[in-house]
Length: 175
View 1: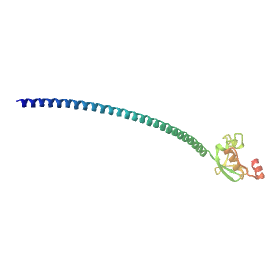
View 2 (view 1 turned 45 degrees about the vertical axis):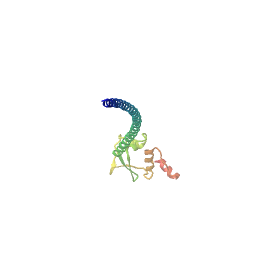
View 3 (view 1 turned 90 degrees about the vertical axis):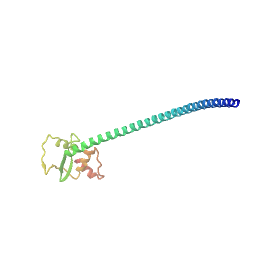
View 4 (view 1 turned 135 degrees about the horizontal axis):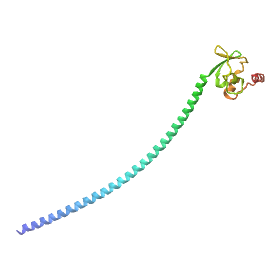
C-alpha cells in the first residue's frame, strides 16, 4: 500500500504540474494574443492613416483636374459663343448679299460692307432711303470697275494696299 500511496502522490504532483503548466500555457497564449492584437491594431491604424493620406491626395488631384477641365470647358464655351456670333455675322452677310455691276465688272458684297463708311455715297445709295433699279439682279454703278475691288477691300478691312504705280494710285483715289 505504501507503493500505491507514493504513486498517488506522484500522480497528484503530476496533475498539479499539468494544471500549472496548462495555466501557464493559457496565460502565455492570452499574452501572445493580446500582443498580436495590439500589433494588428497598430498596423491597422497605420494602414488607415496611409489610406486616409492617399484619399486626401487623390481628392486634391481630382479637384485640381476638375478645375482644369472646368476652365477648358469654359474656354471652349467662350470660343464656341464667339464662333456662333461670327457665323451669325456671316449669315447676315449672306442674307444681305448685294450684286453690283461697276462699269461692266461684276462684284458681290454685303450690305454691311457697302454701309461701313456712313457718310459715303455707297452708304447713302444702299441706306434704304432711295429706290434703286436693278438689271439682272445687279445694281449698276457708272464708275471704273477695274479699281473698285480696292474700294471694297478698304470698306471690308479699313485699309488697303495700293499698287506701286502712281498713275493707278491716282485713278483709285478718284474713285
